[in-house]
Length: 329
Ligand SMILES: [Zn+2]
Image (cartoon, rainbow, N blue to C red):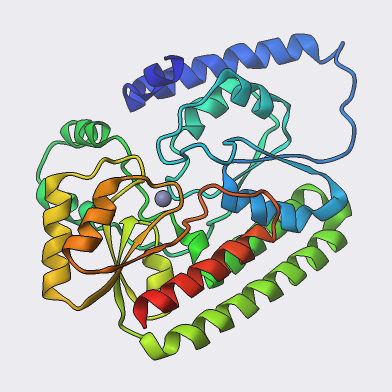
């Protein structure tokens, strides 16, 4: 509820966060004398699975890495809890994917009132793919009043203001994310620099190997057009010369007759090879669409939830590669 109020308007939000940071500042000022000094080990919190895996890979055994959104919870439409604010209040560093994926963060950070919290945006410097509907809206609304535009955005809810955030599904951009996390952590904890560097090197090498496997396996099926359940694979498709069309924008969206109509049109107009569903998606209409359009049904994992071992990325991406190769062959 509290967080919903924050969302109400940007101006309200700014006002409230200013007030809450001032309140917290004074609380902190009163407490510092009695609070014992924190130990020197790193206190790093990550938002959701991919940045968690990458950060853990870099940190290795130099410290603990927590995750805000426990795997299994929906990240696109996440509602924060009071425990999240507590976790952030005690953290030194917060690592996020960025690109509008973690829309809940600004309100949460204001609530945590941790003036020492350092934020790392893993997607720093990555050039994003603009989302289809955004281009469309931008064209349509250019002449409209700014407030009206903002109102529209709120109604849309899960609007990714900064473009498509699913960069972690491209093994090359994933290397850039790991590098960003490494460099930022070295600045914050310089005494761990050597460990961070060698851990990141090893992980980046694995990502390079994964990229090679994707290139080799998918080269013979270049141009393959596939339909996914949610709009997560545009970076991966672009990297390997494939084309993605999605049924819905985010996993929590329900499939509308309009979505089905569009997928049918795309499938008829182009030689679409397969329909790729996701682990955990039980919607019978996905199966129905695949039967109606005579499309092979495979599962592909957007890695928005899963196991928290950094090696899980390679296991899941390996399975994704196999599914894509089967779907496109
Ligand atoms: Zn997604």
